[in-house]
Length: 273
View 1 (cartoon, helix red, strand yellow):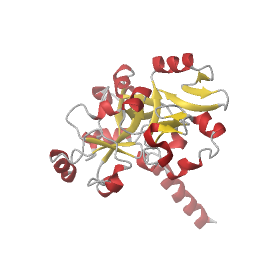
View 2 (view 1 turned 30 degrees about the horizontal axis):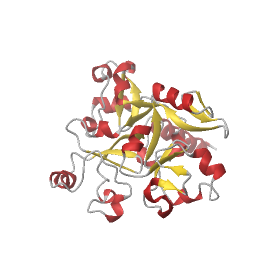
View 3 (view 1 turned 45 degrees about the vertical axis):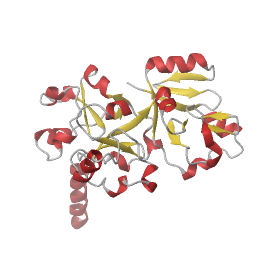
View 4 (view 1 turned 30 degrees about the vertical axis):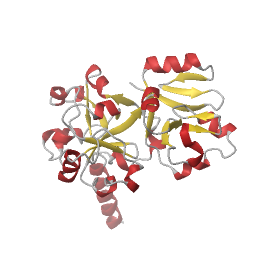
């Protein structure tokens, strides 16, 4: 019995220590599982006195040291550990950082997105060289181009910094060179689908639309076709964009930071903090 108690005590000690370890890499998270979480834009960090690290958002008020970094994403500056890293390891994140493509193209950092995750690749020589040579564009999503492109994200992302999740609003979807649609808050690129040639499917469904109900209830194939695809981002709207969406379609309503389709009683978009 004494031996069992010692083993149990050791196990509880390990559990207590590891419970304060930093959250898992956001690239390992399943997108549908986190859609009930809070998402914060870069602009909201300063307004709410928050800091972001590795895609997670923390309250700066929890530490006097963190207060010096209010409104900032400190991912790149903390890769070697230090006091800030130790402080963050003791805190619970309150949500996730959301970045739009315009955020990715500002400043002197080099970002790409892949499978809904925004990566900072500024410190990786291969990416800097490709960027300088014009082989890829900073701020671009490379989820599907990777198969037929000189740029293969999977090849060089092991040492990249996951900085946040890629967000889209409706203008982003409309202005994209790809045929993007939203289903249950997740953005899918249907450009490679033969029946979506030209951005229209069977003269009924248009790209750059929220299609959860249409695909689940009106399409003969349902959402099965999407099983061969992966989300490239998350439909995230500001409060004003959400109000516009609701005013233009009586089937939508907002609750707890989400937009729901009352015909399904399912969330179809995230309202950003």
